[in-house]
Length: 324
Image 1 (cartoon, rainbow, N blue to C red):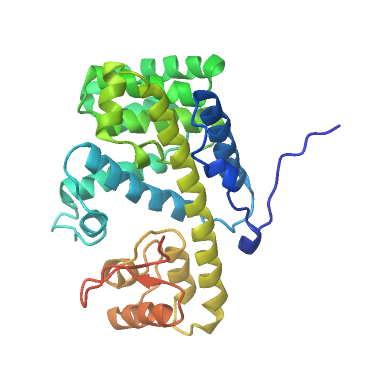
Image 2: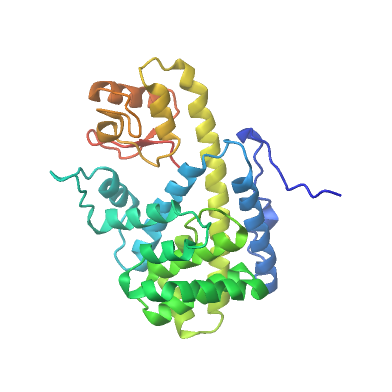
């Protein structure tokens, strides 16, 4: 008998929902959490592996990058708000030399967006990961990843993720983002994803990481529970964005502005779109021109049709997106 991988419909209205028993907090023993986390990752994997375009995977990755930036800012003690991080990244203009000085908040989001663009294929994927981290860790990254991947063979992906988190924190307890990044790489590689999703950090606390480093009590269990919860969060976000993308695509025929198709494609990949700079004077990634006025009118029309949201609540320097 030929094995057929699980498949789901490309119709976002029929995407599966997380069963209540997967998200139940009852019976939080290590054995039950292992079972429920496996179910959570299986549901997420089923969505990521489907071949259709009902789930906008680039948009999902970029939206999770923003959420990971917020989470790691909290872990690092800076407590930057999502709006501030998003503004710093999307609204900082280039200087005269074309460089963008994003500041710590924008740099943090840039870090995670660079991470989700990595492809975990080929013989040098670990070297690519090392290039992304601080120079203080670059020489150790391949050894850490190799050890964690070996542990995953016998103990599974959650244990391997926990091991590499502790390894990094024992080297430097202020390297939270690096620890979470390497955990995400291990999870993605073990699960057979070609690109990582930044999920490890989403529900971790500083206390969780401190206890893990100090080997306190059931710290490993708390970390695994948080990562399982993050897989559920990512799955829910995927289904939400799939529905939003379907709504946006459904109203595309109603748009008459020149370049609207290219603009819609941008909304289907970016967590936030600025009319100035991203749609005007040219739609990003294309040579299609659009005036500033036309860009603003298009965004207002999309809001009017209920296809996108204005994300800032401001009268100026606005950002628009499918939302989450």
